[in-house]
Length: 394
Image (cartoon, rainbow, N blue to C red; front, side):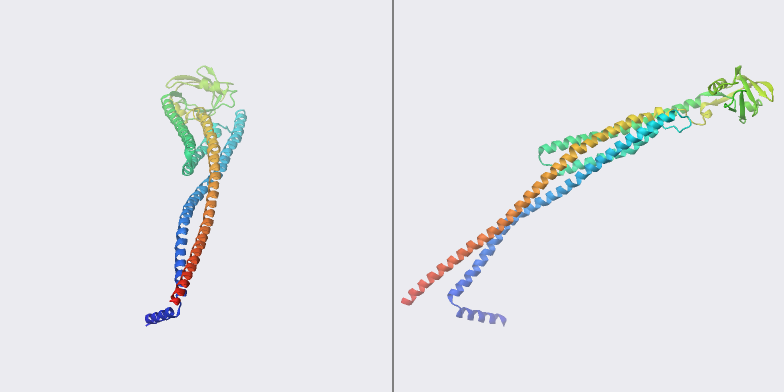
Protein backbone atom coordinates (compact mmCIF):
# COMPACT_ATOMS: atom_id res chain seq x y z
CA UNK A 1 0.00 0.00 0.00
CA UNK A 2 2.76 2.43 0.95
CA UNK A 3 4.67 1.51 -2.20
CA UNK A 4 1.79 2.48 -4.51
CA UNK A 5 1.25 5.69 -2.55
CA UNK A 6 4.93 6.55 -3.13
CA UNK A 7 4.53 5.93 -6.87
CA UNK A 8 1.46 8.17 -7.04
CA UNK A 9 3.31 10.96 -5.21
CA UNK A 10 6.32 10.59 -7.50
CA UNK A 11 4.18 10.74 -10.63
CA UNK A 12 2.31 13.76 -9.27
CA UNK A 13 5.63 15.54 -8.51
CA UNK A 14 6.92 14.73 -11.96
CA UNK A 15 3.77 16.10 -13.65
CA UNK A 16 3.71 19.41 -11.78
CA UNK A 17 7.54 19.96 -11.83
CA UNK A 18 9.06 21.76 -14.78
CA UNK A 19 11.84 20.16 -16.79
CA UNK A 20 14.20 22.91 -15.69
CA UNK A 21 13.66 22.15 -12.04
CA UNK A 22 14.07 18.45 -12.62
CA UNK A 23 17.32 18.97 -14.49
CA UNK A 24 18.58 21.22 -11.72
CA UNK A 25 17.71 18.62 -9.09
CA UNK A 26 19.35 15.76 -11.00
CA UNK A 27 22.48 17.79 -11.72
CA UNK A 28 22.73 18.74 -8.03
CA UNK A 29 22.60 15.07 -7.03
CA UNK A 30 25.29 14.26 -9.61
CA UNK A 31 27.42 17.19 -8.36
CA UNK A 32 27.17 16.09 -4.74
CA UNK A 33 27.96 12.46 -5.63
CA UNK A 34 30.99 13.35 -7.74
CA UNK A 35 32.28 15.77 -5.08
CA UNK A 36 31.85 13.15 -2.33
CA UNK A 37 33.68 10.59 -4.44
CA UNK A 38 36.55 12.90 -5.35
CA UNK A 39 36.83 14.18 -1.76
CA UNK A 40 37.00 10.59 -0.49
CA UNK A 41 39.70 9.66 -3.01
CA UNK A 42 41.75 12.74 -2.21
CA UNK A 43 41.31 12.15 1.52
CA UNK A 44 42.38 8.52 1.18
CA UNK A 45 45.47 9.57 -0.77
CA UNK A 46 46.60 12.02 1.89
CA UNK A 47 45.48 9.91 4.85
CA UNK A 48 47.63 7.01 3.61
CA UNK A 49 50.62 9.29 3.71
CA UNK A 50 49.66 10.61 7.15
CA UNK A 51 49.19 7.05 8.49
CA UNK A 52 52.69 6.11 7.32
CA UNK A 53 54.11 9.17 9.03
CA UNK A 54 52.10 8.40 12.19
CA UNK A 55 53.54 4.87 12.22
CA UNK A 56 57.07 6.28 11.97
CA UNK A 57 56.19 8.77 14.70
CA UNK A 58 55.04 6.00 17.07
CA UNK A 59 58.28 4.08 16.46
CA UNK A 60 60.32 7.20 17.13
CA UNK A 61 58.37 7.91 20.33
CA UNK A 62 59.14 4.34 21.49
CA UNK A 63 62.83 4.83 20.69
CA UNK A 64 62.74 8.14 22.54
CA UNK A 65 61.44 6.40 25.69
CA UNK A 66 64.27 3.82 25.50
CA UNK A 67 66.88 6.53 25.01
CA UNK A 68 65.55 8.85 27.73
CA UNK A 69 65.48 5.97 30.21
CA UNK A 70 69.12 5.14 29.49
CA UNK A 71 70.54 8.63 30.09
CA UNK A 72 69.69 8.82 33.86
CA UNK A 73 71.31 5.39 34.35
CA UNK A 74 74.68 6.94 33.51
CA UNK A 75 74.51 9.38 36.41
CA UNK A 76 73.16 6.75 38.81
CA UNK A 77 75.78 4.12 37.87
CA UNK A 78 78.78 6.46 37.81
CA UNK A 79 77.79 7.92 41.20
CA UNK A 80 77.58 4.38 42.56
CA UNK A 81 81.10 3.62 41.24
CA UNK A 82 82.43 6.91 42.66
CA UNK A 83 80.98 5.97 46.05
CA UNK A 84 82.84 2.66 45.87
CA UNK A 85 86.09 4.50 45.14
CA UNK A 86 85.49 6.98 47.97
CA UNK A 87 84.52 4.27 50.46
CA UNK A 88 87.52 2.15 49.47
CA UNK A 89 89.90 5.08 49.88
CA UNK A 90 88.46 6.06 53.27
CA UNK A 91 88.14 2.56 54.70
CA UNK A 92 91.53 1.32 53.56
CA UNK A 93 93.32 4.45 54.70
CA UNK A 94 91.67 4.13 58.12
CA UNK A 95 92.32 0.40 58.39
CA UNK A 96 95.92 0.76 57.25
CA UNK A 97 96.46 3.32 60.00
CA UNK A 98 94.80 1.03 62.53
CA UNK A 99 96.94 -1.82 61.31
CA UNK A 100 100.05 0.29 61.74
CA UNK A 101 99.04 1.38 65.25
CA UNK A 102 98.03 -2.08 66.38
CA UNK A 103 101.26 -3.60 65.19
CA UNK A 104 102.89 -1.52 67.91
CA UNK A 105 100.25 -2.35 70.51
CA UNK A 106 100.31 -5.97 71.65
CA UNK A 107 97.11 -5.61 73.67
CA UNK A 108 94.96 -4.27 70.79
CA UNK A 109 93.08 -6.52 68.38
CA UNK A 110 95.12 -7.14 65.27
CA UNK A 111 93.74 -5.68 62.01
CA UNK A 112 94.85 -7.77 59.05
CA UNK A 113 94.44 -7.87 55.27
CA UNK A 114 91.20 -9.78 55.66
CA UNK A 115 89.62 -6.59 57.02
CA UNK A 116 91.36 -4.28 54.55
CA UNK A 117 91.13 -6.19 51.25
CA UNK A 118 89.37 -9.55 51.58
CA UNK A 119 85.94 -8.38 52.74
CA UNK A 120 85.81 -5.24 50.53
CA UNK A 121 86.61 -7.41 47.49
CA UNK A 122 83.53 -9.58 48.06
CA UNK A 123 81.41 -6.51 48.78
CA UNK A 124 82.20 -5.04 45.35
CA UNK A 125 82.72 -7.97 42.94
CA UNK A 126 78.96 -8.48 42.61
CA UNK A 127 78.54 -4.77 41.81
CA UNK A 128 81.00 -5.15 38.91
CA UNK A 129 78.93 -8.05 37.57
CA UNK A 130 75.71 -6.03 37.85
CA UNK A 131 77.38 -3.18 35.97
CA UNK A 132 78.38 -5.59 33.22
CA UNK A 133 74.79 -6.71 32.64
CA UNK A 134 73.60 -3.10 32.79
CA UNK A 135 76.10 -2.07 30.12
CA UNK A 136 75.25 -5.12 28.04
CA UNK A 137 71.57 -4.16 28.16
CA UNK A 138 72.52 -0.65 26.97
CA UNK A 139 74.30 -2.20 23.99
CA UNK A 140 71.16 -4.18 23.12
CA UNK A 141 69.05 -1.02 23.23
CA UNK A 142 71.63 0.85 21.15
CA UNK A 143 71.33 -1.85 18.49
CA UNK A 144 67.59 -1.17 18.32
CA UNK A 145 68.00 2.56 17.61
CA UNK A 146 71.28 2.85 15.71
CA UNK A 147 71.36 4.37 12.24
CA UNK A 148 74.21 4.02 9.78
CA UNK A 149 77.44 2.06 9.61
CA UNK A 150 79.41 4.50 11.81
CA UNK A 151 77.11 3.92 14.79
CA UNK A 152 77.21 0.17 14.14
CA UNK A 153 81.03 0.22 14.31
CA UNK A 154 80.92 2.33 17.51
CA UNK A 155 78.49 -0.08 19.19
CA UNK A 156 80.65 -3.05 18.20
CA UNK A 157 83.76 -1.36 19.61
CA UNK A 158 82.23 -0.77 23.04
CA UNK A 159 80.52 -4.16 23.05
CA UNK A 160 83.99 -5.71 22.74
CA UNK A 161 85.22 -3.56 25.65
CA UNK A 162 82.30 -4.64 27.82
CA UNK A 163 82.82 -8.32 26.99
CA UNK A 164 86.54 -7.94 27.70
CA UNK A 165 85.72 -6.51 31.13
CA UNK A 166 83.46 -9.46 31.85
CA UNK A 167 86.32 -11.77 30.88
CA UNK A 168 88.56 -9.87 33.31
CA UNK A 169 85.95 -10.33 36.06
CA UNK A 170 85.81 -14.08 35.38
CA UNK A 171 89.62 -14.33 35.25
CA UNK A 172 89.80 -12.48 38.56
CA UNK A 173 87.24 -14.84 40.11
CA UNK A 174 89.27 -17.80 38.85
CA UNK A 175 92.43 -16.40 40.45
CA UNK A 176 90.59 -15.99 43.74
CA UNK A 177 89.39 -19.61 43.54
CA UNK A 178 92.94 -20.75 42.76
CA UNK A 179 94.19 -18.90 45.85
CA UNK A 180 91.66 -20.73 48.00
CA UNK A 181 92.57 -24.03 46.35
CA UNK A 182 96.24 -23.36 47.04
CA UNK A 183 95.50 -22.51 50.67
CA UNK A 184 93.35 -25.62 51.14
CA UNK A 185 96.10 -27.74 49.59
CA UNK A 186 98.62 -26.12 51.92
CA UNK A 187 96.34 -26.80 54.91
CA UNK A 188 96.16 -30.50 54.00
CA UNK A 189 99.93 -30.68 53.58
CA UNK A 190 100.56 -28.87 56.88
CA UNK A 191 98.04 -31.09 58.66
CA UNK A 192 99.77 -34.20 57.37
CA UNK A 193 103.13 -32.76 58.30
CA UNK A 194 101.89 -31.85 61.80
CA UNK A 195 100.50 -35.35 62.32
CA UNK A 196 103.71 -36.98 61.07
CA UNK A 197 106.06 -34.76 63.11
CA UNK A 198 106.59 -36.30 66.54
CA UNK A 199 107.89 -34.56 69.63
CA UNK A 200 108.78 -35.70 73.10
CA UNK A 201 105.93 -35.29 75.59
CA UNK A 202 106.31 -34.75 79.30
CA UNK A 203 102.75 -33.73 80.13
CA UNK A 204 103.20 -30.61 82.25
CA UNK A 205 101.55 -27.18 82.39
CA UNK A 206 103.78 -24.45 83.73
CA UNK A 207 104.03 -20.74 84.44
CA UNK A 208 106.51 -18.58 82.52
CA UNK A 209 105.57 -15.23 84.10
CA UNK A 210 108.02 -15.52 86.99
CA UNK A 211 111.06 -17.72 86.40
CA UNK A 212 113.28 -16.17 89.05
CA UNK A 213 113.23 -19.42 91.05
CA UNK A 214 112.62 -21.82 88.17
CA UNK A 215 109.60 -23.08 86.23
CA UNK A 216 106.60 -23.62 88.52
CA UNK A 217 104.30 -26.51 87.56
CA UNK A 218 100.64 -25.56 87.35
CA UNK A 219 99.32 -28.98 86.38
CA UNK A 220 100.22 -32.54 85.39
CA UNK A 221 98.39 -34.36 82.59
CA UNK A 222 96.72 -37.65 83.33
CA UNK A 223 98.60 -40.77 82.14
CA UNK A 224 101.60 -38.63 81.20
CA UNK A 225 105.32 -39.27 81.88
CA UNK A 226 105.18 -36.42 84.43
CA UNK A 227 102.43 -38.22 86.36
CA UNK A 228 104.25 -41.55 86.03
CA UNK A 229 107.43 -40.06 87.49
CA UNK A 230 105.53 -38.34 90.35
CA UNK A 231 105.81 -34.69 89.36
CA UNK A 232 103.28 -32.56 91.20
CA UNK A 233 101.71 -29.11 90.80
CA UNK A 234 103.76 -26.58 92.75
CA UNK A 235 107.08 -28.24 91.95
CA UNK A 236 109.84 -25.96 90.62
CA UNK A 237 111.89 -27.29 87.71
CA UNK A 238 115.26 -25.61 88.11
CA UNK A 239 117.17 -27.68 85.57
CA UNK A 240 116.27 -29.80 82.53
CA UNK A 241 118.87 -32.18 81.18
CA UNK A 242 121.71 -30.02 82.45
CA UNK A 243 120.15 -26.68 81.23
CA UNK A 244 119.17 -24.19 83.90
CA UNK A 245 115.61 -22.83 83.78
CA UNK A 246 116.08 -20.23 86.55
CA UNK A 247 115.53 -16.64 85.44
CA UNK A 248 115.12 -17.53 81.77
CA UNK A 249 112.82 -15.74 79.32
CA UNK A 250 109.92 -17.40 77.55
CA UNK A 251 111.74 -18.38 74.35
CA UNK A 252 114.74 -19.79 76.21
CA UNK A 253 112.45 -21.74 78.53
CA UNK A 254 110.57 -23.30 75.61
CA UNK A 255 113.80 -24.11 73.85
CA UNK A 256 115.40 -25.72 76.95
CA UNK A 257 112.28 -27.79 77.66
CA UNK A 258 112.06 -29.21 74.14
CA UNK A 259 112.59 -32.95 73.95
CA UNK A 260 112.63 -35.92 71.62
CA UNK A 261 110.15 -38.81 71.95
CA UNK A 262 111.00 -41.92 73.96
CA UNK A 263 114.19 -40.36 75.38
CA UNK A 264 115.48 -40.18 78.95
CA UNK A 265 116.00 -36.70 80.40
CA UNK A 266 117.27 -35.66 83.86
CA UNK A 267 115.15 -33.13 85.76
CA UNK A 268 116.19 -31.24 88.89
CA UNK A 269 113.05 -30.55 90.91
CA UNK A 270 112.78 -28.26 93.96
CA UNK A 271 109.98 -29.39 96.26
CA UNK A 272 109.55 -28.04 99.79
CA UNK A 273 113.15 -26.72 99.82
CA UNK A 274 114.42 -30.14 98.71
CA UNK A 275 116.20 -30.78 95.41
CA UNK A 276 115.04 -33.98 93.72
CA UNK A 277 116.72 -35.50 90.68
CA UNK A 278 114.46 -37.49 88.33
CA UNK A 279 115.33 -39.42 85.19
CA UNK A 280 112.19 -39.08 83.14
CA UNK A 281 111.42 -40.94 79.91
CA UNK A 282 109.37 -38.90 77.46
CA UNK A 283 106.53 -40.37 75.43
CA UNK A 284 105.52 -39.52 71.88
CA UNK A 285 103.10 -36.77 70.73
CA UNK A 286 102.44 -35.24 67.33
CA UNK A 287 102.62 -31.54 66.56
CA UNK A 288 98.93 -31.79 65.56
CA UNK A 289 98.05 -32.91 69.12
CA UNK A 290 100.31 -30.27 70.69
CA UNK A 291 98.56 -27.50 68.68
CA UNK A 292 95.15 -28.87 69.61
CA UNK A 293 94.25 -29.22 65.94
CA UNK A 294 95.23 -25.65 65.15
CA UNK A 295 97.54 -25.22 62.16
CA UNK A 296 100.38 -22.76 62.37
CA UNK A 297 99.83 -21.27 58.89
CA UNK A 298 100.25 -17.58 58.26
CA UNK A 299 96.90 -17.09 56.53
CA UNK A 300 97.53 -13.36 56.42
CA UNK A 301 100.60 -13.87 54.25
CA UNK A 302 99.51 -16.93 52.28
CA UNK A 303 95.92 -15.92 51.41
CA UNK A 304 94.66 -12.52 52.51
CA UNK A 305 97.62 -10.46 51.29
CA UNK A 306 96.86 -11.58 47.70
CA UNK A 307 93.50 -9.83 47.85
CA UNK A 308 95.32 -6.52 47.71
CA UNK A 309 96.14 -7.24 44.06
CA UNK A 310 92.70 -8.74 43.44
CA UNK A 311 90.96 -5.61 44.71
CA UNK A 312 93.27 -3.35 42.71
CA UNK A 313 92.33 -5.32 39.58
CA UNK A 314 88.67 -5.00 40.50
CA UNK A 315 89.01 -1.22 40.91
CA UNK A 316 90.67 -1.09 37.48
CA UNK A 317 87.61 -2.83 35.99
CA UNK A 318 85.36 -0.28 37.69
CA UNK A 319 87.43 2.56 36.21
CA UNK A 320 86.99 1.03 32.75
CA UNK A 321 83.25 0.56 33.23
CA UNK A 322 82.86 4.13 34.47
CA UNK A 323 84.65 5.39 31.35
CA UNK A 324 82.35 3.30 29.13
CA UNK A 325 79.35 4.97 30.77
CA UNK A 326 80.78 8.36 29.79
CA UNK A 327 82.30 7.52 26.39
CA UNK A 328 79.45 5.39 25.10
CA UNK A 329 76.21 5.43 27.10
CA UNK A 330 76.07 9.17 27.75
CA UNK A 331 77.51 10.31 24.40
CA UNK A 332 75.61 7.85 22.22
CA UNK A 333 72.19 8.15 23.86
CA UNK A 334 72.34 11.95 24.22
CA UNK A 335 73.16 12.21 20.52
CA UNK A 336 70.31 9.81 19.68
CA UNK A 337 67.94 11.86 21.84
CA UNK A 338 68.73 15.01 19.84
CA UNK A 339 68.37 13.15 16.53
CA UNK A 340 65.06 11.54 17.51
CA UNK A 341 63.63 14.86 18.72
CA UNK A 342 64.56 16.44 15.38
CA UNK A 343 62.96 13.58 13.46
CA UNK A 344 59.79 13.78 15.57
CA UNK A 345 59.58 17.54 14.97
CA UNK A 346 60.12 17.02 11.23
CA UNK A 347 57.40 14.34 10.99
CA UNK A 348 54.93 16.47 12.98
CA UNK A 349 55.58 19.33 10.57
CA UNK A 350 55.06 17.02 7.60
CA UNK A 351 51.78 15.71 9.06
CA UNK A 352 50.61 19.27 9.66
CA UNK A 353 51.49 20.27 6.09
CA UNK A 354 49.78 17.19 4.65
CA UNK A 355 46.64 17.84 6.71
CA UNK A 356 46.54 21.46 5.50
CA UNK A 357 47.23 20.37 1.95
CA UNK A 358 44.47 17.78 2.16
CA UNK A 359 41.96 20.41 3.25
CA UNK A 360 43.14 22.84 0.57
CA UNK A 361 42.94 20.27 -2.23
CA UNK A 362 39.44 19.13 -1.18
CA UNK A 363 38.33 22.79 -1.08
CA UNK A 364 39.88 23.40 -4.50
CA UNK A 365 38.12 20.32 -5.87
CA UNK A 366 34.86 21.66 -4.50
CA UNK A 367 35.27 25.02 -6.24
CA UNK A 368 36.33 23.40 -9.52
CA UNK A 369 33.33 21.07 -9.47
CA UNK A 370 31.05 23.94 -8.46
CA UNK A 371 32.34 25.95 -11.40
CA UNK A 372 31.75 23.00 -13.73
CA UNK A 373 28.28 22.57 -12.28
CA UNK A 374 27.34 26.24 -12.76
CA UNK A 375 28.81 26.27 -16.27
CA UNK A 376 26.90 23.13 -17.25
CA UNK A 377 23.67 24.56 -15.86
CA UNK A 378 24.16 27.82 -17.71
CA UNK A 379 24.90 25.95 -20.92
CA UNK A 380 21.91 23.65 -20.49
CA UNK A 381 19.45 26.46 -19.69
CA UNK A 382 20.73 28.62 -22.55
CA UNK A 383 20.41 25.81 -25.07
CA UNK A 384 16.99 24.92 -23.68
CA UNK A 385 15.67 28.46 -24.10
CA UNK A 386 16.90 28.62 -27.70
CA UNK A 387 15.26 25.27 -28.41
CA UNK A 388 11.97 26.42 -26.84
CA UNK A 389 11.94 29.61 -28.96
CA UNK A 390 12.43 27.64 -32.16
CA UNK A 391 9.66 25.27 -31.18
CA UNK A 392 7.22 28.19 -30.63
CA UNK A 393 7.97 29.71 -34.07
CA UNK A 394 7.12 26.48 -35.73
